[in-house]
Image 1: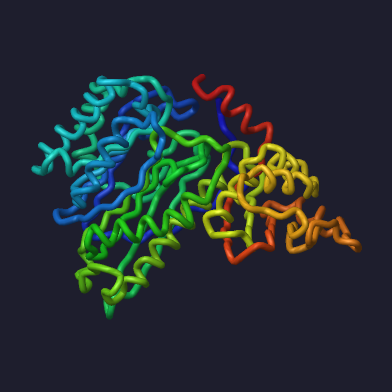
Image 2: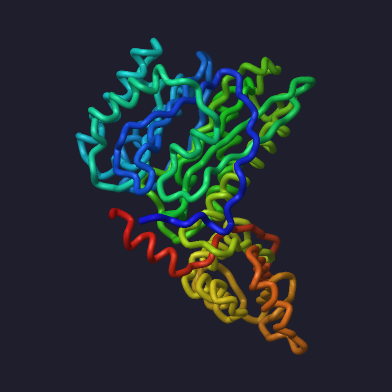
Length: 412
């Protein structure tokens, strides 16, 4: 099935070269790619010695072997390589899935002269089909001698149902040293992360201790990747990894008291936010990018859960797809979220126009500007609970016939 490019697609940005990172792609031919028989589907990132790493992973109880191993690997805080396989998630494949990952780690570690635990592996695609070890080995052999590729090449190679390559850049000043960040991500459907999202990778030349890198990623993740949803489904393979090569030679960031720690954390959060929003822009069948801002909740966590409940509601998403200013569906979603709410204090707005205030329709409410707003590609929904100081922002997309068409034909 040929998938049309998302109308919300963004051009691939100019990403900086990251000292200590070499990207390569090749064709492992894990699947027959419709209309792209020669597309690359194996990505190899070679990382300099001394690279530190942090990661967040899916909380799915049916996670892949790649995720299970990754959760343990990040504890050591070091990395020398990343392999990403596209077209086959290698999830729900038992011991054969683990053998495939072991084979990849062994081959790459032997070539680089490092331990197998320093080689991270991710896979994405159809669930339940063991990753072909022979294809993986042949692909890695080719990747080891391939010419370095661009960030956009790598972003395309890690995709599956993605309709455009996704990347984001950032920078920060650590004392007098400028550090750079570059990130790529894939994701389009099966998006409702309970930790991170899809497959996302951020590379930086910053010299940063792995413990702080993990803390900064956890903080960034909570406000970005864990605040997006396309369809309410959490993948078995969701992974976000951050690799720091230390080649910028800045004063090492050890903790939050280190000079430049806040600046680096802010830059990382910005890159993560941009990547997360790009995934929503490529939501399967998406026609509208939706921002849901929740305020006045009992706590920030409560606000986030309410926001995600609204964002995951098929009734809300289809109403927006149909450009219907049906704020009653938002009321429904707030009420079912299982969080503190008071009907008589609830207020709802679309595009900055309040349709309901303090539990009642606004008396002089004019739906015309709201209808005009809903005809656009970027939709803003505001919900004020009137209970406390808790607030959160969640991003999602509408639900259209395109989502059904893509997923009904996914394995064909």
